[in-house]
Length: 145
Image (cartoon, rainbow, N blue to C red; front, side, top):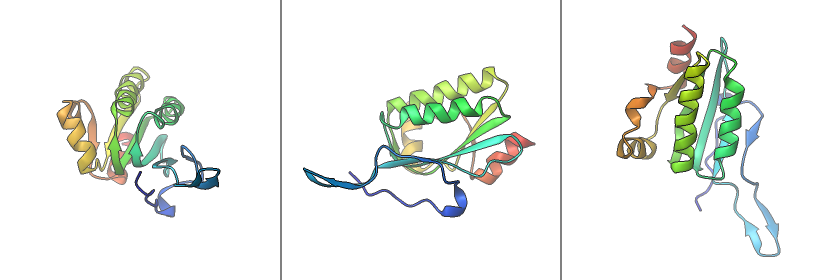
């Protein structure tokens, strides 16, 4: 399991979903969670969610909850610049988010899609289904404008 990369404090609020924190138990030292899902700075009714690390089946319910919270606003930006991996469960949640937000007249923009995540989206031929922006600031402008 890889180490959890740090998220710059100015890019997120305090609320942060992780599968578990580092700790010590009967089996020894457990490493910290391999992923984080954090709220970014929202603006103009556009919610920002920052994905970091390796997101798999364990991350899907937390991502779903964040998407459901965003359905009442103008849109959702998912910052994927620090996401190093997503599996099929997370891809399913992204596709579900796209459909549900569209039905609620809210937009979805993937921001700063990392190379490993882009590779998966290309292999599954789903990259073109999403709106994209090079960074979060641009994505928020697209949805708020």
